[in-house]
Image (cartoon, rainbow, N blue to C red; front, side):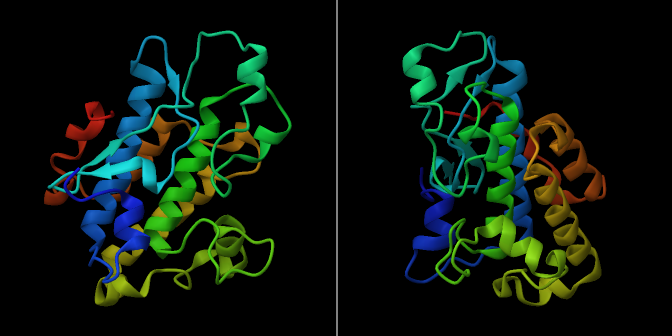
Length: 220
């Protein structure tokens, strides 16, 4: 992809890319549509199991494309010994808490990972950032930072972050991310519900929202 991965753009460039809020919102909702498509519109449905910024590729329009299905599982496939032993596969910092206690796969595992990606988009911190206290990940860091009320917002958003409409969207996305990263899987929303929440945050006539749904089918 012409713009590399979301990980490249957020964390790897020597001169960090300028990512305005509109671009971050586009990436967030485009990825949500892609995941919802995998979960609900594929037959059988697909659990990706390794959603993270390096597996979200960005095209020339900064539209996100979900990639790397190496450890994805079809929802109608019974678990084998091999699939049980590899169930905890994924990337530390993005793995849902229940993955270490169960051999039962769930779409809510992807929802958790997606919530972590949202927090990275907002904070521009890594899931396991070197600036965090020992034993802390991005979810616990945001929770400990006054529930994320503006304290954790990436300074690179500059003046945008103090504009009332944009700031309310950012705080709304933090709240969605925290719902996605609830410790109990049953307390997390579905990806369809995430799309509804993100859509409801933004005025219907907001021009940059137009075309976001085009990414629903762009998962590779």
